[in-house]
Image 1 (cartoon, rainbow, N blue to C red):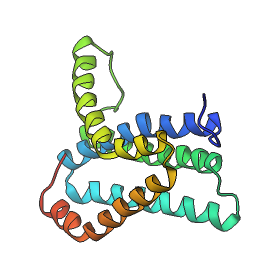
Image 2: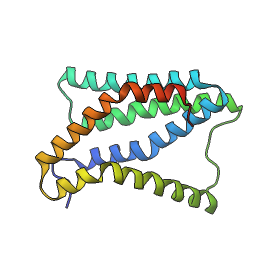
Image 3: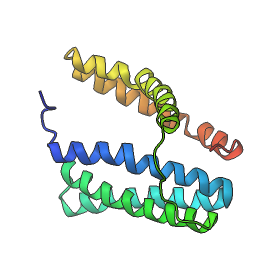
Length: 168
């Protein structure tokens, strides 16, 4: 059974963007930060956020904001910023930033890392999924809104921690 109201193309683009493009972006960003510095990585991070905001604003202003248009626009926007980030990496390391052959140790490392990230996501978002699966959509919506409200309330502390504790 497919998710009602979610076109297949939108789902594929959204998942592909999150898994592949965002993963490439965050890896490139970490390399830029470690090789060039925090300022260069911050500029790319800010450009990324601004591009996503501009995309959402333009689609809404044009009256064509749908899941499919957002997915297509996001894939194109994130793809463009990934190209920018990988160009910065290539320039910083003095070599093309292309993946080499995949070996078993890469797969093992990725699985171990992915398992931890996946478990963290399930812990953080699993409760909303369970509420939706149990047909408590209104409660899941209120719960999701409350958790976003807490994220906004903690934003100054999160920003301070992010600015004072560099991470890769």
